[in-house]
Amino acid sequence: MKHITYTLVFTAFVSALAYYALGHPSRGRVERLQSERAQLESRNDELREENQDLERVVVALRDDPRLAERRARAVAGLSRPDELIFSFQRAESPGEVAVKLDVSPEGAMLAGREIAISDLAAALSGLRRDLPGAQLTVKYAEGVDALARQRVHDIVESSPLSPATYEEHTKR
Image (cartoon, rainbow, N blue to C red; front, side):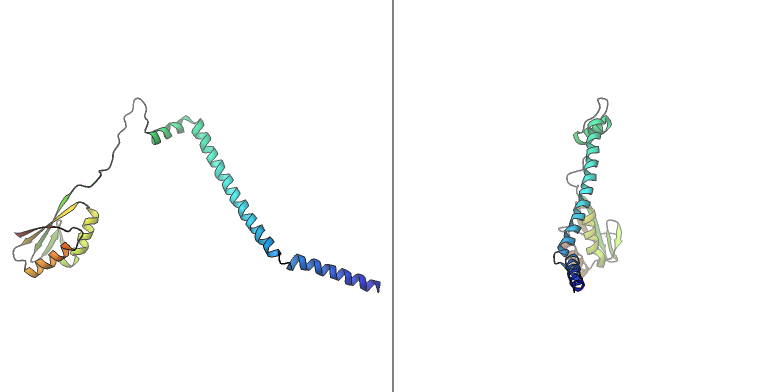
């Protein structure tokens, strides 16, 4: 009987140990915390490497006269006594550009290029994008009928190049 009691006690002990080791409710929490710890250690390693890189840069800027000179030139615009510095700046606003649209009974020519009336709206939008300061002048040749004039006028007035200047009866 003693032997059976010891066997039962031993089995209960092993079962309890297995329950706590494999099925305890806080086991998932422990695994999650271990995963989080691994991620934090990885991030610490990355930050440690970044700090070392920054320390090398600080030491180089402090100790290397060539880097200090390069930085002074770039940031403060300094130069050596025998050098001239040329500074080029962009124009604040683009100048105005005169663009001509010639309309004839055969078709249209925008800035020297043949263009179909059906493609005129897209071409005028592209022209505004490429030449922000464009000023459009529309010239109608003899023989352009009123319907064609009105269609061109409507397209031009609804385009980004509106308002435009209109001239009549030019020979093409």
